[in-house]
Image 1 (cartoon, rainbow, N blue to C red):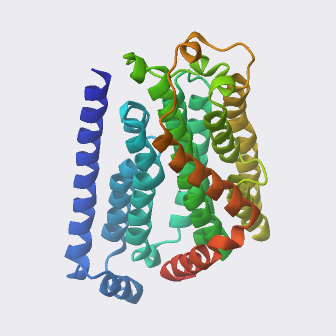
Image 2: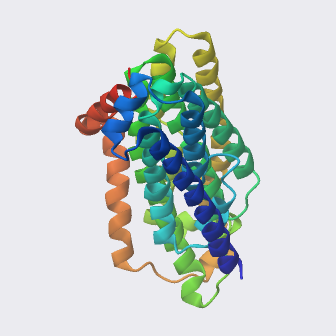
Length: 348
């Protein structure tokens, strides 16, 4: 029943979000008489269109794509969907699907950028809301996958803050840091969900128990499943922003970009970002501590062996999380042009 509820909730909310996007497309078409993005951008920059309908179209895009991205308060489908989906699908939902929605939102807003200078502050505002709500709700979770789902909401906030710094203050490093965090979050959250999925399988599913994986179930995991415990710890500590893992490097770039603006509002926001990164350790660190307890849980004692094929993707993702954290220039060829392209699209 919870899976059915989660699927229906996502179906309804996603469909409504798509309707909002289509209404925004209709408004833009009515103004610009074209759906070609380059032509729409030229039309908006020429000042020929009416500002109010174009701003309304931008608002509709924010609401519609905001459902896909899980912007607070449009996020209510995400914890249920991510927690109830198979772990491999949870990894894709968190590491790919919501980021794809974010890119679609940016692409849509970029052609309307000349209508107003509100978009940067809007991204910063949603970023702060996502971080605060995601982290506070994650603190009270007892189910591992549901906790990871709420942390995804918070990590979308880090991306939005970096993008907001770029659009609001014209700081290209903010966009580069945001795209870097988009990539690093996909790696770390994919590793976390897959690790949790392996443990869910060996501790529950393989012994015909379909109850969810809880934090209490993980007690003493390292004694029987040391490799899975290690990669899960790497993923969680990376998400918490501990060096030298990739999560620290991507968050650090966003913080440095904000400081470089020398703008009081932006600096206050990045101080809030740093505080939220510390708060997130309040739910990541207890899981790592539980995993390495001496007294194993009943689930660990009664668990089965880990299939060898499940270990390979965990190792590959763990190596990527560590290697890119130590050598962030490995992805510079990708995130730097992306950041420059975003700033150019918004007229920076």
